[in-house]
Image (cartoon, rainbow, N blue to C red; front, side, top):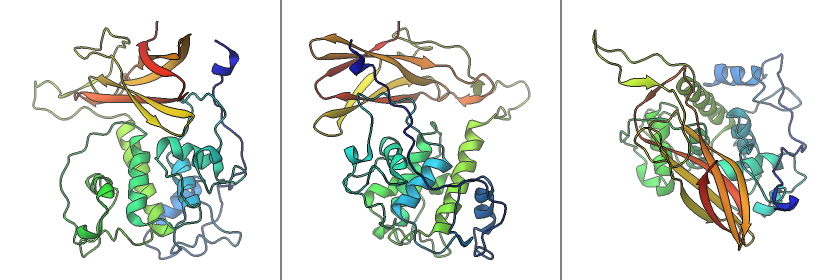
Length: 326
C-alpha cells in the first residue's frame, strides 16, 4: 500500500470567529426569555457577539453562525473519519470559500449534519431547518432511547415532512416546546436567542444521558432492568447473542468519492464501533477493518439492541468490504 492511501485527515487550522470566555454579559439580552441560558453559554465560551458587546438576540440566525454554533456547542468533529485526500469546503459546497472563517465548521458539518451542496452561508435558517440540524447533531453524540409520543401541532400542515421526525424528537426530549397556541412556527426564521435556548437544552440532554446514571428504582429484591456496560468483543464472534458482522451502506459524495457507513448491531447503546484501518489488497478492492469499543463500566444502559455506526470516505475506484480487526 502506498503512502497515498495511508493519508489520514487531521484538523485543518483555519480562521474562525473567536469565542473565548467573556467576562461581561451581553448588553442587549436583559429581559430576553433565554437570557440566563445565553449568559451560561457565553461564560462557557460558546456564544460570541459583536464588537459592541451585543448579542442581537432577535436577529435571524444565518447558516454560518448556526453551523458554527452546533459544531462548537456539541463538540462535533471528524477525528474518526479517514480520508484519501485533505478535505476542503469547496469539495462539498458551491458557496463556501476555503478561506472563510467558518469553512472548517462546514466540513465538520458535512460529515455530521448532512448539509446540501448549494447551502448559502449567509442564508437564514428556519425553525424547522434548525430542528433537523440540531437533532442530527444530537444523534452524533450517541444513541438515546426516547419514548415516541406524537405531539399535536396546530400548524402541522406547515411542517415539511422531512422535518417532522426531528421536531417530534425535540419535543419528546423536552429540548423544544410549542408556544401557547400549540404552534412550532416551522417556517419562521429562527432567532439567535431561540437557537441558543435550544442548544442549551440539547447540551443538558446529552450530558444527562452520557454522564453517570443511577440504576432505575425497583421493588425490594428485584433485579434492575438496566445493567452496567462490561467486557468487550469484536469481530464476527458477536457480543452476547448479537452477531457483530457489519452491514455496509455506500453513498455517493461526488464523482470521485463515496461515503461508506458500517452499521453493527450491539446489545445496548453502550457499545460503539471504530475503524482501525483500511487495506488495499489489489483488484480495486478495499477492506475496512473495524472493532467494537467497550461500554463505560460506570454507566447503566437500557438492554435494548442498538445500532453502532461509523463512516469513512473512499475513492469511488474501490469496492469496499468490512472485516473485523485481527
